[in-house]
Image 1 (tube, one colour):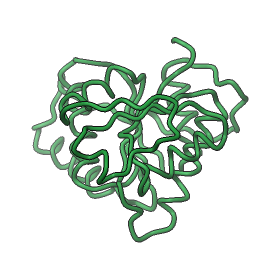
Image 2 (cartoon, one colour):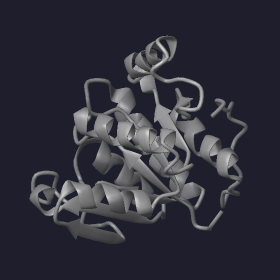
Image 3 (spheres, rainbow, N blue to C red):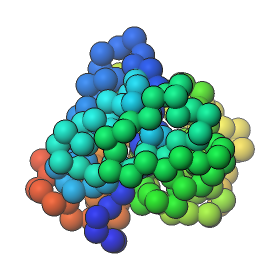
Length: 199
């Protein structure tokens, strides 16, 4: 695996109602920077998006923000990013985020975050990529989606040969070790002996 590694983080442009979401974004950003892993994300300076980007930068990491022109002011582009890419539309944004990333993480967020996560799950299911996908189920936020996936399996809409492979992390501290293990990446610093969820 190439070094440095880049992880795409999908998350909300708001903070949500539980302080644990902001804490998780901060912890994820710090752990990525400490491990020498670059952040690829949607380029905003607000909500969880801004929190994870600031945590990466504050801890000496590298940030690439990719934002469509029409959202540049609404989401207040994170000017301190090492690389800011302004694109014409959402399709270009998502394609570039995919191309620049080695793995994907979904923190809590709204329908945009859900749509981005589902797109990566679908592409993986169809064999378009094998990059790790981690659902950060902080305080059970994604539990309804995980339950829905099980429901689809039970009714064989997700069936043999069309498996959807992803990891689930209940704590932000587990995300980097999960991804590092999956793609045989050696972090810049030694990670703690966090328990790993099977991917």
